[in-house]
Amino acid sequence: MKKNIKKVFSDIEKIRSKNNRNWMNLLKLSYELKPKETLRIVSKILNKDKKLITLAKKLKNISK
Image 1 (tube, rainbow, N blue to C red):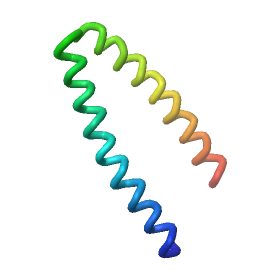
Image 2 (image 1 turned 90 degrees about the vertical axis):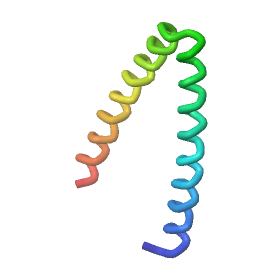
Image 3 (image 1 turned 45 degrees about the horizontal axis):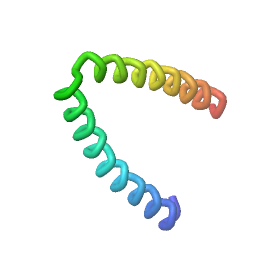
Image 4 (image 1 turned 120 degrees about the vertical axis):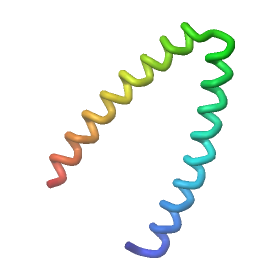
């Protein structure tokens, strides 16, 4: 892999790591204030994630 591409991947990883912490802080705060509503929203997010995973698997199979 080229050095520039490795650098971009590294930068993306660092940013995602920080942003994941922000998401978790937001989730904790939301749950403290409105647990039922928070869980309802998280459920919707997980359903969309499942669809993304399915699409990613299709892409992976096409690329073989």
